[in-house]
Image (cartoon, rainbow, N blue to C red):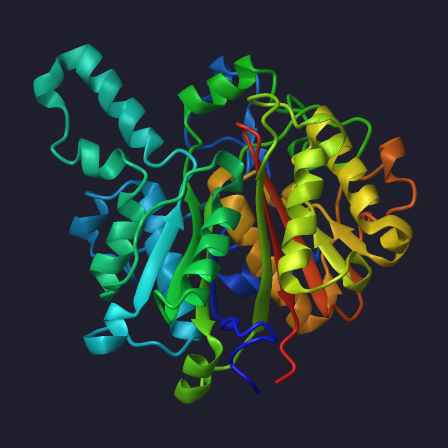
Length: 423
């Protein structure tokens, strides 16, 4: 099989996956929870939520990274960095890469680990400490634990990658942008292997309070598992979540020479801006539509070839309606044949990690011939007409091609197209 496509461009396959979410601390448990339609949303435990309007979140419970990170080093790393190291190790292991990469391979291997907010808990906690006890009590690790690029740097430090390394920050589109830009990095021959994804650990009273002040969060506090309800008319805002997702992307011939198993092929990436509003989508979802069309164009595909769409679908009234309009326009008459899944109904909205976790799920859908459900659908949004949103129960079906949508505050859109690897 040629390692370049018909345009002479290097082909890129997925050879490893990593995931930490409210449904599980690895890919298998997260995937099993998604297929079962299990909600990871509960009443917040990481802080006393009595002072905030939204008291629910999709938290990663009982997280223990000690198998990957020394306990002394844990104290010097924000939780988002710890998530990133754990998913990186999982993905490297599945890809059959060594515990530490060195030599020429290291120089051709890079990391793009993005985060929407970075070490926000570290930042807020140290600011509060300073206000209470003075600036001389701030931790010497305050800055390197708090800034958003250090997670990507720590992955390279831990595992030896010497290639391109930085953090992409585009709010809730971060994880998808990181994967798309890593794809482009390999295609232009600046690396042979890229670890790409997103990590977020932002369940902090100040963050929840801020989103609550915007009226962005669900306040269905009496029924947490039913609170995140994308595409349902009774949706009242998103539920904040945390976690991380990571993909190992690899140039095809490089993977073949190593004997690595391609899990799927990444064939398209589109990135656009709404240039419309800092939080609301452009009318009719036109920015999202352009991103999807661009991703398909770069994949050399038509929308009629899609089997599955992993929707951004955060459970906000305006956002979900705009995305449904965009999908109806993109898919056209093919709409009823495409299984659309809104997995934030179970994972919550993991912000900068969302596009990466959902890309992990797409690869699993392709590999296993199954599409997770959109749970909590009771009264679908009228814009659902003509679309299959996979309500409440997973669908077993062949998935040869799939689109992943991710959109962020600021009007930033990313779309990824994955394809089944047939050898």
